[in-house]
Image 1 (cartoon, rainbow, N blue to C red):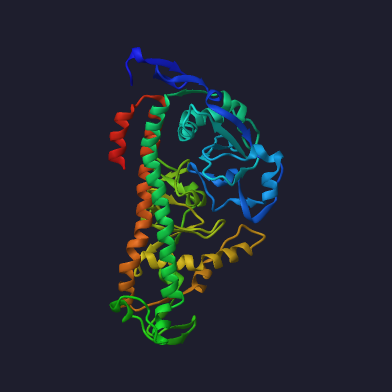
Image 2 (image 1 turned 180 degrees about the horizontal axis):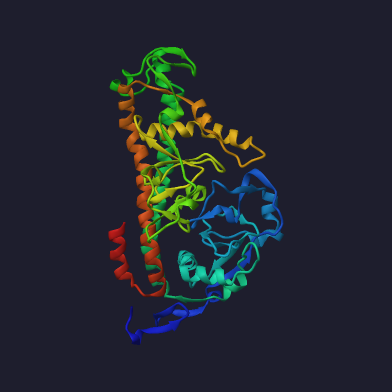
Length: 441
């Protein structure tokens, strides 16, 4: 922190004297909100971003719906069309999630506010300000509503902020952005590698492409040592035609599917506790805000990074957990490996996941779920040991890297979240933060 001669008082505490302290409105040219009436949705067209589409400082375009061009161009909806680099703030829920608009063909609905920076503030610096705990608390304290809290953008506009000169803003953005960029790169790499693993698994273990190629006297386009391990003919089985020498296994014989506990019966004691991993934590991939339970549990019910978790009720999901140690709640299976490798169990569950979801959706009178016998009804063709071992040399590094890369991203996010408030308040100066990021990244 600068010495006393170089500081001034601000709502966030002491900040450098050369920073400008003023309402947020001094640094933005427009604050508004999205279109308040339903927009027509189509299969293609401009993206219509809602609050549910904003996570982790970005827009998740995989969940965004589309609107038609006529509605998008309507003058009445002009306020719902952000420019590239405008900040988007979710209004519902008390605390606002923030993202930067990175496309021209985007509009927002009434659950999202638009904050347009002027030339005195870097758009990503604005995003970082709104993400810091201090301003998140301010927005939550200023929100209203009985069941669902709503953030009023006119109050956000009046929040006092402390802003350094642009050059310093750019430096801070560069430092924090290096961590964010690495996290985003990890996310993209995982998406690509998981798609590759699933495609290869389907080709070899579901469609049996190498076997079909050899049976039809075609080149499987694989290294000769691996090609030689695939047979050239099929045999009949309960699963239909499978490669000669392969066997059919029930999904629940590949590993142990251990159901979680009713953890309210295992309260924490003596300060020794674990976060409870429920379906919500499975979907968010972290334990932020989770309940706590006793850590004195059998190891079968303690979750570690790399474990396969599979929710059999509610939202059926299967993930390679990377959110840190936790306690396994009921409605979740922990898939404990025995004879078969992790990649086979993980991809084997995903092979049947849509069928499981369809079964769960058919239970209209209760919360959708599957039962244990559905695991036995699901079957998988499994190759003999030599081919399994050869496949593992390819599949294992890919699948293992998925959860390890997520663990790395979690550590980077912890470093970023510790660093950001100190930089935004001026407590930590740029030159010191650069060394910190170099070590973390």
